[in-house]
Length: 124
Image (cartoon, rainbow, N blue to C red; front, side):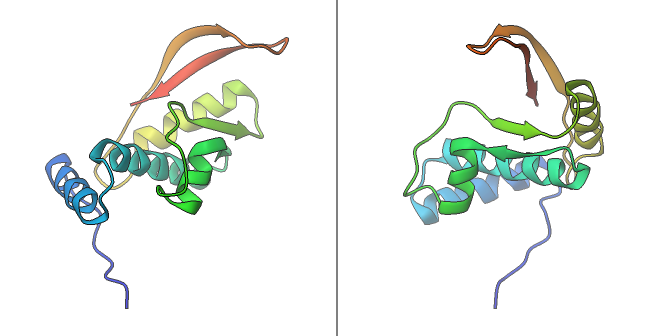
């Protein structure tokens, strides 16, 4: 039977769980922390029905850390306009997960190799 615990109620509790999991699984703490954030953001995106996580981060969540590389970014695919995506993601982050919330921060424009210029966003 799987031991299902309540979500952590504060950042100290979350930090302790991440440290313990990192030690138990022998995975660097930073990687566990990043993977936890990816799962939370993925669940917020799914709950908001705005898109999904793709790329190396998606594979890492599905396959695990031992068979995947670490990615420095978080790639998503959306099925809404960029404006609606940002609005709905911002709302989901404000509503949060357990006791944790976030914001969408505009990091400015980037020039992609495709003909479209996109804006970089970060969630904290």
